[in-house]
Image 1: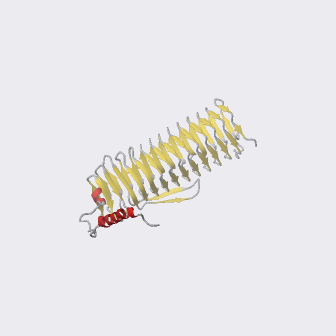
Image 2: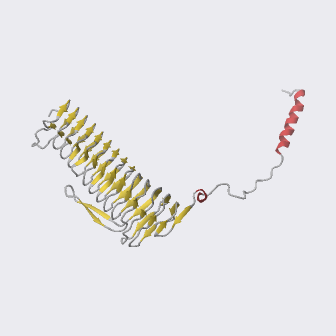
Image 3: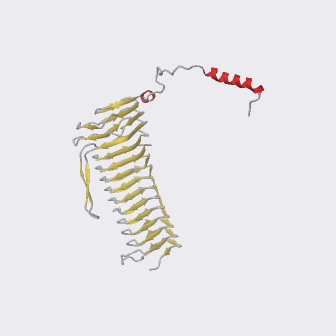
Length: 373
């Protein structure tokens, strides 16, 4: 097909415009100044390459390498200013056995962030024997406390803290503790007051795994701690697990416990709750009661294969619960209400009067279903 004669002049003009519009471009030259800011320009950072180190001014600080502290007294790092960020950079703060101070101690008021690394003392906790004669033997050495902060609102996350003489971590009012692993300390793993603990693990400590007061504990685990798994006053505990602790899996005063699992704990109960609520929890293979509630509420819970009563209470309300194959009664409440519950296969101990659901004369039993034996 031929191009019409009338269109040829227009096509020639378009081709010429396209050729001459491009011209000749010289090669680009290197920029005379950086096109992007460095991290230090965005947030100036101060390196920490030796110990002891005291932070006296607000700002961002970071470890440059693994550091070991050997002074018999004092702290490895002291934070004496508010509004400080301390990044351990994935490195480890360690101590010699003679150290008695803390790895990180604060005298600041607020605004602290501590994260991303490990703290290692020299304390060992040996767990020997079997229940009921299991013991936690402490050989103390090194850091007293891993992180010791009384500053309001301290944020601590992504740390592994092990082998401290006393506690792995102490955090005060409104602190946020996330993804901290506390291991083999001479006292408690994590001690938090009025703040939140989430995604944490505390194991092999001689006292409690996690002690919390007037705060929240969520998605956390406490294993093989000497005095108990999770302990506290006025706390809200949810989606947690406590296994093989020397005391109760959880002991809670004036709080609430929900969607938790407690097994093989050696204290009076897997869950020991006073003046609060326990809902949708499971307790099994604990040495004492599965769940004990005093002047509180247990609802939607399951207790099985526990060494004493499945679900016990004093002036308590127990509703919608199930108790199976516990050594004594399935559910036993004194001075309270048991409603819409199921119990089966309980009381291998033939001295128990009521093998399934037991209530005293001042209690009420409504729509409970003890299984036939």
